[in-house]
Amino acid sequence: MRKNENAVILNDSELCLCVFRAVVNWMEWRDCFEYQGDLKENPILRDENLFGKFAQEYGLRWLGDRGDRNDFRVRLRQSKCFEAAIENRDASMIDRCVEDVRSNSGNRQMSAVSKIAMFLDPAYFMPIDKFAKKGLRNLGAVSSEYRNYSSYLDAICHHAEPILQTPILKKIKQTRLSQCIEDQNGFYRRVLDVALMSIGGRWSAMDR
Image (tube, rainbow, N blue to C red):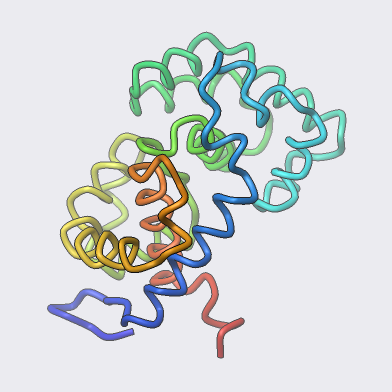
């Protein structure tokens, strides 16, 4: 990585790796990302076993055992607020609908809800992650700019996309595997998320 006007920028090989990681992620969860039917019937909300896999892979073990995880899934699936937030692409409603599923896990509820929202509409919603937040700070954002979910998306728009959008879109066009993905807008947002996590050090220890 290099710094440009106090912002950390990914080099070409790092950006290529971000696209590759996003391709692998998209292919693994394609049935969820590209689902076009009723929101409640998206596999990530309908399938209890798949939701368990999601919880394991996305660092949501704090949801508890199978029974607790399933209770969280059912509450979110039945949440009218969450359904409206997704259908209307209303980020501010995500903050409110967290109350529908809140237990005793504090701010981690927002992380879980945002990650599920990402599966349901990857072209708009992005997951909140501690490494992505650190990536935003490395790009010049300050924590006070994203105290809730809607302001988090605004911070990405104002700090990350002006720097990362053009090189990401260029790299996607150069990557043959990414061309088989129909939802290019959604895939771009997945690469953007992976890039933010990379800038935030998500894989730095593993890649040394």
